[in-house]
Length: 144
Image 1 (cartoon, rainbow, N blue to C red):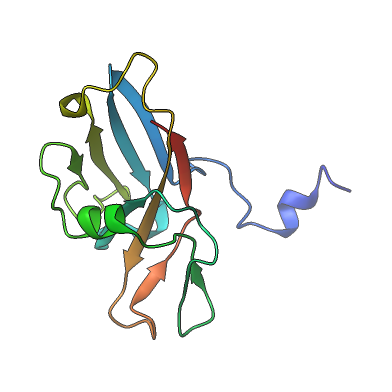
Image 2 (cartoon, rainbow, N blue to C red):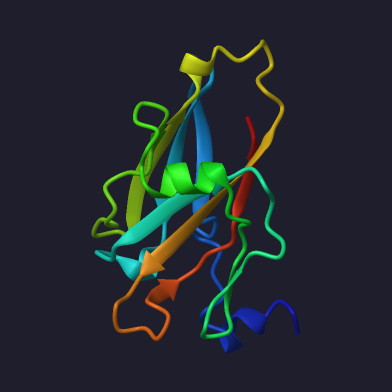
């Protein structure tokens, strides 16, 4: 029964299923790969925080952005950390992908990093949606 469950739910797909993925490109530097294949050409917002995910931000349509806003959220949301935080182009390409980056070399972290968790949230926008949000993938956590 489980083996054939795929045929009953055609939306069940793990191909490019992780919507936010960080890849360490060098010491204290990461590429932030974004993938929302069903939202090609859509605008997006990328932000980060240090305060966890609960209770998050309740939206008027019943969904929740799983990120507690803090100082880092305000800085990354408004792109006020040039050189350290690059949210990418703000529009997903024709495959529904974009690339941002995080570069902490200027902080001169100790060997092994700062050992802090950072939560990254991606919000795909849609002005016709009641909340203005088309898609809200899971929040991604990484240790910097």
